[in-house]
Length: 276
Ligand code: PDD
Image (cartoon, rainbow, N blue to C red; front, side):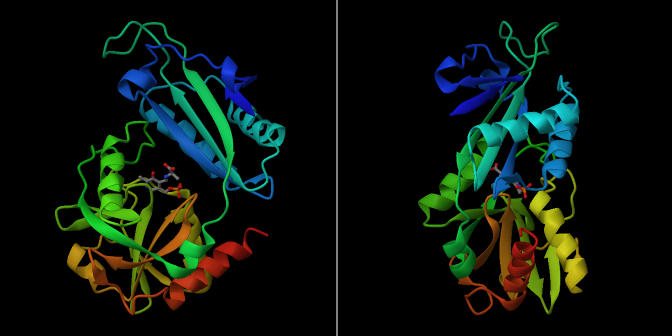
């Protein structure tokens, strides 16, 4: 398997990361997960734009143009002969003697690798259960930062309670999932948190909002409360790897009739139609 290290392709056992890499010590870096369908990078431009935007927000300069970066991603997928899978790519502020403030002279370290992943068809059809968990993260959730401890702890708590995802909330307001965006549908209207600093503006979210426009589904980018969420007709989550997964139960309360809803299915079909 080929690994991308800065702009070079190496074998995994050749990869050397410093003990003082700031990603390792501080989570001082950002990342992206890009889906590969039939050997093609899906919504590559959007992911690359967000990668550069996240880097800029934390003042890391990606030392390649977006075109060069895109080519590196493309070559990585091709070299590893990935048909259906994903690319994980991160950039850290590099390594330096440990100090919190930015080092005067460190070079960013980029690492990318691929993995074969199948579409979660069973979950997409039958749905999953979720759990409400207080959103304890920082106030810049719009940055796809390597600091994922708040997300990791939330997902773990959901798993320990037999749930697939955490529905994060700040007080009564639902923000997003631990690694996904959240949506409710009531009387034909789709509700989701606006793309503020409190959520990651998901690429799948953008795709879904575009599909709603095409299908004539009204969208309200208004946050839902926990009480409102439980009264939705349908509820689902989205992400690059999950696509659209219905959430049929939250905190043990059944949503709608407890099965994938008609508009969720319609969105899944429309999403899938664009993959071919
Ligand atoms: N997670 N919100 C959070 C906190 C996320 O981590 C993700 C993605 C999303 C959905 O964004 P997108 O549709 O662009 O994948 C929302 C990725 C898949 C991950 O960390 O593995």
